[in-house]
Length: 172
Image (cartoon, rainbow, N blue to C red; front, side, top):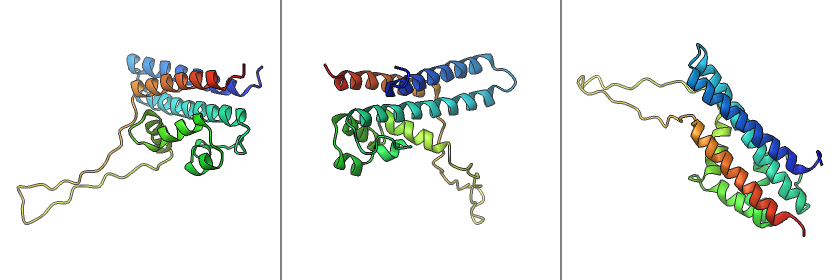
């Protein structure tokens, strides 16, 4: 039973919950290094939620015996091309969620991938010397890190999705 595919998903969801708890404690405690603790727990939570999503994809791919059942990334499993080659209703739902930027799954994937982006230098505002009273500003799309509540919502949604999918994937 310990080698069943669902155990990885459950384990990652549990670890994400632990990271969220430590994150809340770090924010509440306000120790000297609380900001570093919050960042570390945010990254740990994103890592485990991504792993839980990958585990869920492995569960589905394993159940249907899809050729990509051992893929290393979620993106390898959640592509429209893979879905067309090996259709399944569960993967179709995940692909649909991942493709729409306003969904919790797309936001989770974007936040996870943002972890691997290099820090961006803040560009100073350009000033027009002919108009000294008006300051020109450049509006950057500064990405705010996801909050603890947003990641808790993603964790709950992923958990509910896993339970619903498992109900439909089980053989009677």
